Length: 149
Image 1 (cartoon, rainbow, N blue to C red):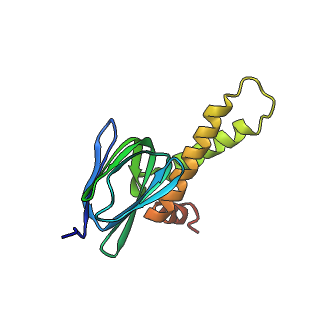
Image 2: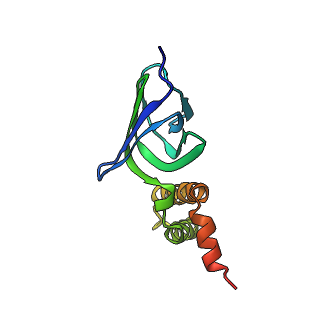
C-alpha cells in the first residue's frame, strides 16, 4: 500500500528547522525544481538556491533553501541545507538592504575592488528571501507598516 504523506525534515548546521508530515513538496535542485509525492523513487540530489514549498492539507508553506543536499525516500525527505529559513522568519527590511548593497556593488563596472562573485551571490540570496517572504505574508505586513498614512 502506498503512503499518502511524506515525512519532511529540514536541517541546517545551526538547527532543525522543520519536521512535519506533508502531502507533497517542491525543492530547488541544481538544474531546476523537483516535485516530490509520496512513493517517490529514492534519490539523493544536490540543492540549488531557491524556494522549498510544501503542501499540508489546503495550506501551502514556503522556505528558502540555499545549497546542501536532499535525500528522497518513498516516505521521507531529509533536506540538509547550508542555509534555510521559513518565510515568516525573513527580515524583509534586511533582505531589501542586502539587495540594494549588492545592486550598488554590481553597478560599479570595471572596479577591481568589487568581488563580483560575492556580490552576485548576495543579490541572488536577497532576491530569493524577498520572493519567499511575499508568499509567507511577511512583505504584505512590512509594506503596510512602511506605507501607513
